[in-house]
Structure formats: C-alpha cells, structure tokens
Image 1 (spheres, rainbow, N blue to C red):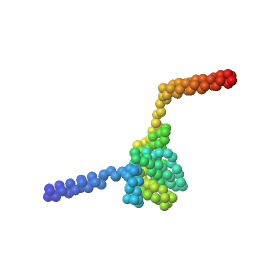
Image 2: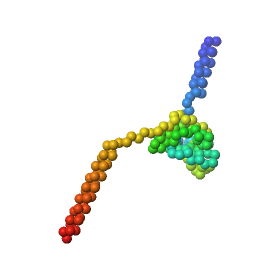
Image 3: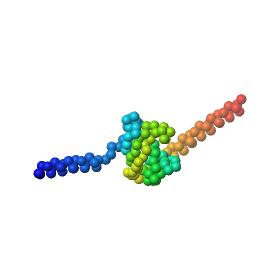
Image 4: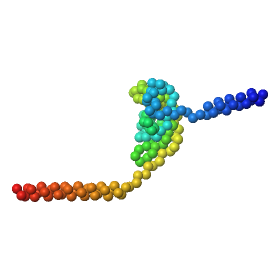
Length: 166
C-alpha cells in the first residue's frame, strides 16, 4: 500500500512540475529562421516594447525587440494599454512577455510577419535613461573648432596677400 501511495505521490509531483513549467520563450531570430515551422503556432516571446503604439481601430501594432531582432505584435487596445513605457533614446521600454499566434505572412495584416497577441504580461516596467553631459567632449570640440577657424583665417590671409601682390 505504501509503495502505491509513493508511486502516486511521485507521479503527482512530476505532473504538477510539468504543468507549472514556464512556457518556452522563442527569440525573434528563432521565429524568423523557423517561420515555416512556427506559422500558425502558439508562441511566447519576451523583449522590450519599443517605438510607438500604432492604433488601428480596436487594435494596435507594437514592436518588440529582443537580443536577436524585432518583430511586430498585433494586439487589442486593451492589451496595448498595459504597456507604460516604450523604448527610445530617452527611455528603456517595458519588458513584455507576449503569448500569441505567430504568422509568417498574415493575410489579414497585408502579409506582415507578426505575432497576434492573446495576452501581454509586463515583466519589468521601463524607466528613464540618464544621459550625462560630458564636458571633456565639449572642450575637445571647442579646441578643434578654434583650430579650424585659425586654419581658415590663415588661408584667407594668404589668399589676400597673393591677390595684393599681383
């Protein structure tokens, strides 16, 4: 009896672990390189939301970038509303996890390669990117400008002397 209970407990724990596993996250490169394999399949991607939310009626486009590339994500305005920060020069965008259907050439989206999002989860919120003012670069630039002006002025003086000497 104890052996049966032990086996059942083992199977239950094993099955529970399998059911609780994280979804397999695909990179953009994997999706693009295996586009025929993944076409129409449920996929999970994770990356930074970048650019702009481009609204189209009740839906929107958002670009997601991971370490291997970028891909367009077609999602409802409700899901797009979850995204607080989009990546650009001044801001690190939200890190999002998108679960949806990969389309190699979605006919409903004029043949675009995209992920049709079913759910969007915010993994990390974006934040401002600080840009420090580098005074050394300003000083070097000013010195180079002064040198260029001196050279130009010298050239002009030489040209005037040559004209006056003729």
